[in-house]
Image (tube, rainbow, N blue to C red; front, side):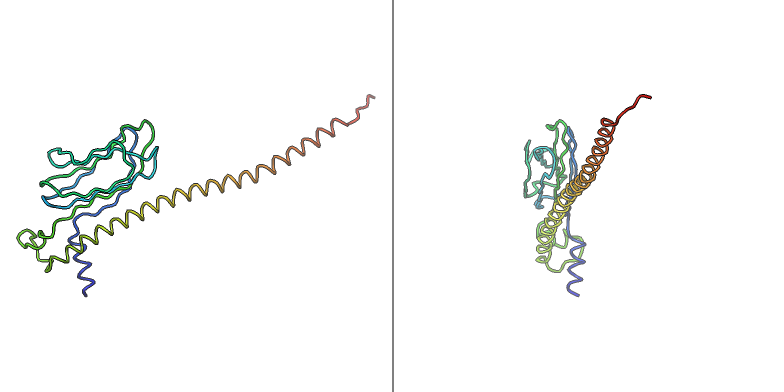
Length: 205
């Protein structure tokens, strides 16, 4: 019963935990945003998995376009900060510097409300939680599950890439194994035919 209650609480009250796999084309900027309240904890992590030198521009802005983080080239990173005001916080991946190469990356955008939000029924507007400490553990568990999911997606992508390379190499090996004996056989037949014609005695009647 306790396990079911914890599961229901987890489903109802986890704020945001999303791991995404995206492709940012050359000369393109992809932006994502989410709403946060003042004092909410925001965690952003990302990693470029494929494309060029595996780097991309990263820009994080608060409401009113206040710049929180700006970088032209990064391969991976993880940032945690507290929301300074209510509003939408924006995460942008900038691939404008790349001329031809798209970038494939995974990222996580997680927003968690502070403990006192769930402890005060007037702010909570529900009676799901009886103990604020449970929510703290749920927030921590949600963040760890998001990291595990992101790592699994990354490993799955790497596995798919290695599998494609292995299958391509296997196909080439089989094709070459068939092509080489066939070429030798054809050359042997042509040589026999040529030698036969070369030593053939022609008589004039």
